[in-house]
Length: 365
View 1 (cartoon, rainbow, N blue to C red):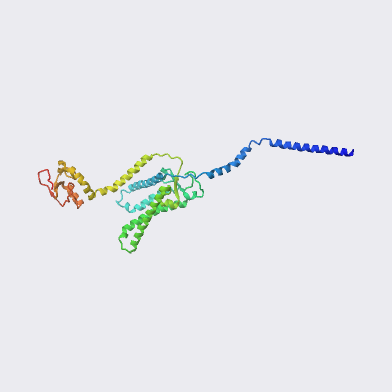
View 2 (view 1 turned 90 degrees about the vertical axis):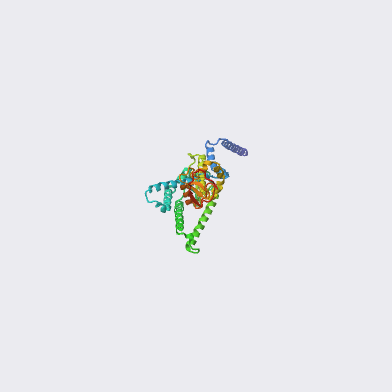
């Protein structure tokens, strides 16, 4: 009896333990089947977004920033034109002064105007007038190197104080000193002095420095045309790059008009260079045979002065060809050009004689 009473509780305890285990497992299953909180996905999204952005940006290539070379060159040309306009207006203020007085201080006047433009533009973190018209500004390229990737052409700080001061020293002071040194050496005629004198050696040094600077400027121009950065040596030395000032630009003048103006300006400069060469005797002698036959075919051309194309009031003959001219036309040409040749036959004129004949026709020899 005792054994049976002892065994009964043991069986009941085991059943209770199994019941408690089954209830705990059911509770755990019920907990796993419960839905997550509503804001759980938001927390997970905020945790994963930084990692996703870092992975996505690491695979993106750097977008090359291309600043228009035409805009940079036009900005330099506009700055030159602006300086010329300011100089013209300033010279008009002193038009009552002694003629030629400002010519002695032309270098100081140019330096003063360049300093004014620098003071009210670059020194106060503003672009020059030409650069502003092209929607450009200066950027410190040294500050952009640690950043690595650049997505647009608008990032980056402006020039530092040291860069601004060195820019003024190079553009204003450097150009003024060089202009004064060249004018002083030309006035003192250092190039015509003795071979081993100090002035001669200084003049040779100036010529070599000028040649090296022009060669370096030409090399920088080729690099600029290839890369589109740093128009001149000063910008390259200071690491001051021209970039866009704002993302939007309202162009008041079209590219077609600017191209026409540029072509016409260069064409006019070429004509100014070639016109003095066309007045030389060799070119005129080369062109005269073509117009000789045309002029000789008309009787009216023989009676008129070949210079003013009018009837001679005081007719004179050019010797030895005896072609008729106005006295003043023939006299001024002979005085201006000692080796003057007849405009009709290209014969050298050795003397002139008053025409006393009654006939209007002048015989040719």
